Image (cartoon, rainbow, N blue to C red; front, side, top):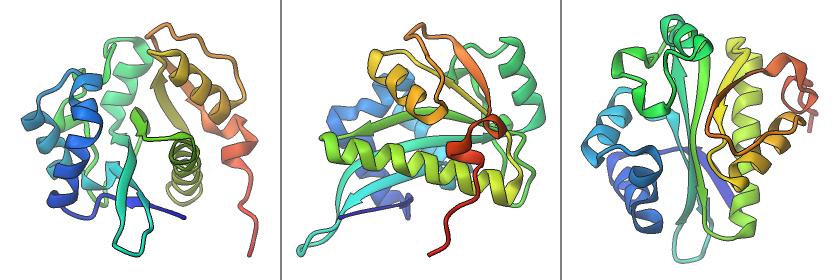
Length: 183
């Protein structure tokens, strides 16, 4: 059983930084200090995938969805920002501010089940922000074949692992824009 939610505190964030031998720093080409500054500016952007166990929750993955302002959205759209590391702290939306778009930075998980849980977590988070905050645009880049497959699953559109940032209007994808089933 998995639980997915925002990274609750800096101690958990430190564990996230260590996961898969520091994959986040390598994937983003950012230092741990830069990543910590992002976390402190926008902690709700970092989501943990936890496996429930009798001995406590085990961190088995995470994803990073950066909420960005209008200026950054336009820079992503025009190609002025060509990678996530170029997004500045001032581009990130603080609590209570209007989110112009989201940038899917990194998805990392250990094992097939955790990978599925992470992707489902990304979809659920996008769906929630689409419906509650009216966030329509997602920017993402597929740097690997796995990343391209994940974006295909999210959007239903074919993606190449070309390393380019793509703009996705989430309103066009039933997986995200469809109303959530009631329980």
